[in-house]
Length: 424
Image (cartoon, rainbow, N blue to C red; front, side, top):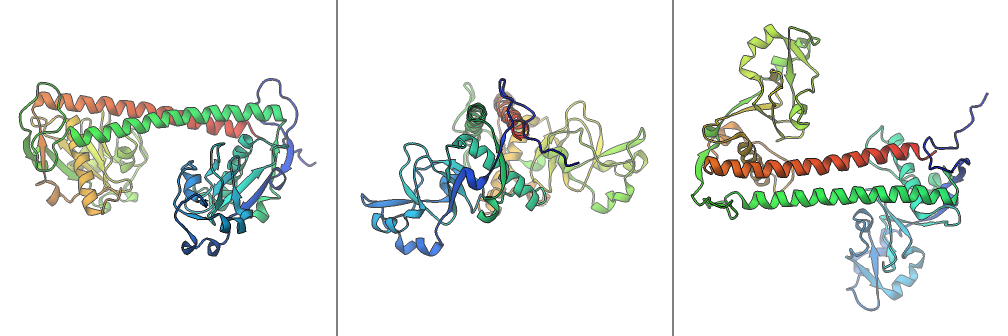
């Protein structure tokens, strides 16, 4: 017996019970890929003027901003490319760079010509609303990409010959309105919290640049009231002790044993990256751990990832169990007679940032200097009381960042759940 295909979503708004209708993507919208690159060569571009037409590029779709403009052509030449014209209400989709980004041109957007890296979509509004179409299209891209790239996050858009006959399900116009509004409100909330998160991150960056002395200076530009003295020069080798994990041969997989009452956990870079001491994959016997006692780590130690996502810093909390660091970690024990841990973590992160920028020509890739370079590096530290004020300020700022990030993550999880359950 052939199993009947499901035509209703698992979750619905009250009052809707009818089956969703099967349609092809070729029925619910018209698609147009941009012209061949030879039609929009650089020598054809002209300065912006009263008789020019803008070229829409993938940056407009990716950044969700129609104002972005780099290239223009004459109105006369644009007439020859009228099939590739786009205007308010059209949906443009990036087909190069960050593929699959979708953007509906708003009412106040100016007409233009799409380039070869865009696809224009005009929705058949007698069948489906723009808002619902965008969700259906995103879902289709997600499923198609997952099949084509073995679960990778890289998006792919099917060729038009494959896209147009693809089936999708759409509800009544009233239900479309409810579903579209729900996701519109959810996206607005996500954008709102993401904006707050970005603002606090920008604030943190500003204060990191101004609440610590610049190169060649001994006092910061911004200080808490009551503090006036110069900051004291110290070497990183004075303010902390550093230990890299053992060679890989000391922790080969054949040495690992199942977790038990007489085992010791191995701390890995995932603990530093995810800021979570509970994560545990590998264990060794207590007897073997005693041979590696020089690499032991415990509550209060700071661990730093030296592989994968390099430079992630994590202080093991009071309830963390002791363990042995692996070859991809560095253990740091702060000299708390000179500097408090919360301030040390900021100084260390600043040092990694400055060192990485010099070593990688401004790239965002982090690098940790070798011990021979790290230990003699100079940093500046204030009085104990000022250390506490500065550190507390950044701890509170970090808590706000974590709060907004958690909210964004929760909303993204909710959106993912509803996308899976509000559609057939």
